[in-house]
Image 1 (tube, one colour):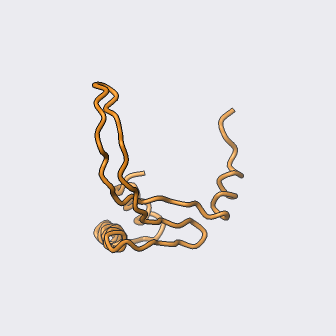
Image 2 (cartoon, one colour):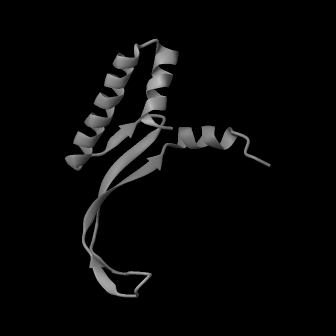
Image 3 (cartoon, rainbow, N blue to C red):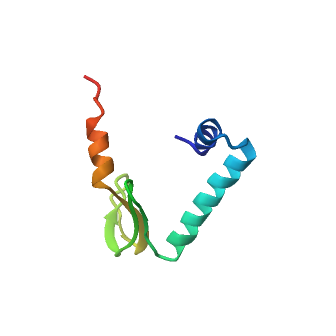
Length: 96
């Protein structure tokens, strides 16, 4: 799903104007970016938790050339699904 599709869903389901929905989506994602840049987590009840974690440096290899190099430490965002959402997803019949 894209941002545009989220905006359309808000327009249809909540009755917001296209501009209001767009502004809401932009504000929501800007707020998330700000929180992540401060190294904090976001927990959404019934959905899951986004965590910022530090990955250490490690040695990697270019698969094309075989040259080894150091991959610098960096921060990454991980997501842990809530048990409630996991249960709901497991109830959805899959393709057979």
